[in-house]
Length: 155
Length: 305
Ligand SMILES: [Zn+2]
Image (cartoon, rainbow over the protein chains, first blue to last red):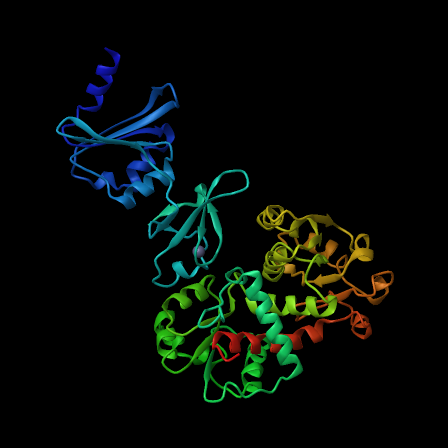
């Protein structure tokens, strides 16, 4: 059965997390922001996979790893369409779409070089907002400038 | 109940419409009776990490009229900042010596940060290119005083509308009072779309022009700003536009009787000196109003009124 086959594909992990439905071209960025290159865990990933919903998607499977809140927020900023699937003993124990947070703290650098957060030891704080065209932006609590996705640099 | 008691003022958007009115009403009281020794035995710190003589003198004058004492510095050269002290340490130290801190600092967002770490209230006297809320309050005071009300005025903003933080804050504040906005600027210095979005979201209107005279007959307030040459990527373009946004006395003919010309000062050449004699020139009185507004602000935050 098709459904069964899919589950098998995902449950190939005994314990760990699958990040599914990543926009294909964001797969490597997700690997980078989660610092998976430096990880000792087994990692499998694929890009340009066929997906009915997304056209081309990426997928990452990390063995023996579950993500903390701040890591999930990072994923949401880069790949808001992603789904997180947690697996324990071959069973899917949790499956949910990542949520864009309302605030992000100490995750992203402010793109304004004159912002106090880039000059003094200040934790960055941003409000996640939408501009008038519905595009996601981050508004710095300190310098009050807003930056788009293209300016996001993770700490 | 004084809602401003003990609160820092970092950005004009920290204040509600009622809180703005509270300050303006109190400023009016100080205009009628400026010398009130309510700050006797209070110490105000004035920390200017970059020089801004006009703003600093206005604050210091406000404190002196209230009978308070001032400590602080007028530029970072003479302070411990030069030795590499962090802003947090400077604020924490100075808060031991004072009841309130007035701060000017070239770092964007430094005022918000200072307000988070400081045990005493902070008044932002300018943080980089970000905010300068006391300028906004004195502009509002000047508009209310000359027009009798802040409600539903036609305000014309002229010059550098792209980078001018005073016009952005003023737009934000005036959206609370239902103004109609008229913007006159060169193509490359137009009002940013984020500011226009606030206006739309407030259900208000704005109009854009390239010639001052097109809007002169309906203006209640002409708010002039400096156009700085270094804002232009192309010096040739600057040469082309710089004289299109200069106001002279003759241009005021045909304007409404209640119309007044405002400018945050210092001016360079955007208001011809022949305008100074016109009863419609209000920019020096505007600067004077800054002292009343700062007196009101300090009195309200320290809950002395
Ligand atoms: Zn910032």
